[in-house]
Length: 296
Image (cartoon, rainbow, N blue to C red; front, side, top):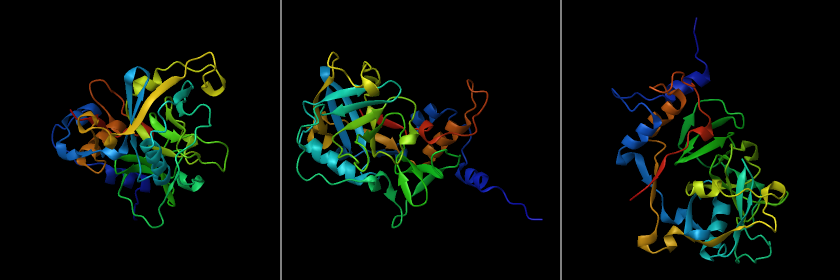
């Protein structure tokens, strides 16, 4: 009789790497001990630097490879300095921080591309993505994994970025409007994955989440600030590539195809050390954030 292992178990076994003796025992230790070869530089043109009231800085990594049309618009808006003088207008507890032009009357720069719901996912018909699979069930997608440093959900026809904590999406009105990229938000609560493929996700906050998540909550509907409350002024938004060399933030992200990331992912799902007695034997897409760190 021929015995066949379930496909999910086979995938899990295939994704579980072989490790040397005495490997790092925690995800944090893996990150701390990862060699230089396990890290990839984030291009300056993919970093959006937002300075808010008090000179506080928020850095967003954009994902042009997975959300190309919306990111192209965001780059044009940044180069036009369009967000200078706008504000953070909405802070809804356990949900999002949103910013843009509160009047909705500020003209956007010419040349922004039209967008549609087709831009919420990346079609796979003519693409072959190098995927590090996440071999655990996901309630929102048939399969999940990591591509070029980003978590992705997939259905065979398309791949899309999920709404994880700290991820940045594009505000829109009711369909068929898909947003231009002028109105952005960051997730500050439990991952609202029900929004996946209903709104464009364009990147993630890699510095300054403590600034966004600790802002006063708006008392208006959906967390919008009322006229008696204080929208947080945005002083400037620049691409890091526009800044003088000495002022550019520099970050690296872990190569999601590296042995270090494989070990990290294994421990996120199967941690057992001095603190953890019971390994979870699984991890969801948003609970295995790709490590990112600043360079000195």
